[in-house]
Each structure stands twice: as C-alpha cells, then as structure tokens.
Image (tube, rainbow, N blue to C red):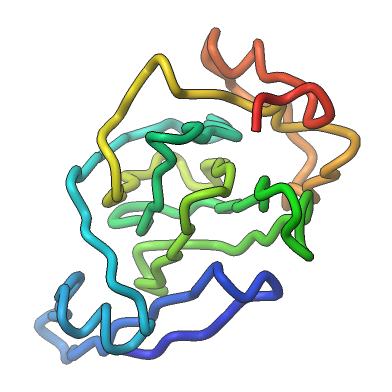
Length: 180
C-alpha cells in the first residue's frame, strides 16, 4: 500500500497494491495492521456504509460534532466521484481549507479523512457506488452540514453543474455560521 499526504497533511491518499491480468484484478481493500503501519495511525473502524448515487448528485459537506466526530476511509467501487475534505478544526493551520480528488473504480484510490473534517462528493459518472468506513457510529443528533457552495471555502468542483441535493443538503449552513 502506498500512502501519500495531500496538501492538508492529515488527509491521506491510500493506494492499494493491485494485482491484475487479463482475467481481472485482486487487491486487499483494507487490512487493519497494514493500514496502521502505513499511516502511522491507530484507527478503529466501527461502521461500514455503502451509497449509490446518480450522476450530478452532490452529497455534503457532512460532518459530526464531538463527542461523535467521525474519521472516514472512503472509496468508489463503481463509477467515479470528485471527493472533497474540508478542515473544520478550529486552530488548525489549514482551518477552512479543502482538498479534492477523483476516486474511481479504475484508480482504486482511497482517501483517509480524519475526524474534524467535513466531507462531500459529486458523482461524475452515470452512477457511483461509494463505500466508507467510519471511526464512530452515525449519530443524527450530532450530524451537521455546510453548504456545498459556501463562498468562504470556495470548493472548485470539477465542472459546471446544477447539483442534485437532498432536502438536508439544501439546508447546509454557511461555513461562518456552522457549528464546529
């Protein structure tokens, strides 16, 4: 497994070693010991989630506040998305900054998003199956959402589009007013 820090050092790109030939491919999508050794982290995942979304669906920017902040290890097993992590840790040198990258079934990349980050993605393909492991359980009373198009954060989504948003995401808060 190859681990590469992004421009926000705590957000990591994880690239598994893929073994492939004309028959297909195999890779170990997660191994706790290998993950901990490669990242230097001691992370305990407690929940796996799977979502399927149509092209143009934008989910996020979601996060949970303490004591139920979640770290996420995300990947795409079908299709492609533009995935975004926003640093919402007050006092962090990268507070309010974001990183984004394409995750796809072709590149097999995963993104480690630690607790203290908002997360979202835009589906680029006809549809996408998105899998993620979390370090804390879903706690709806602690869930928050920042507007995907917040003018302070200024995420540069990869294309001009009118996003398909859930009712919850349509109510995303401005970053300056968000409960962090």
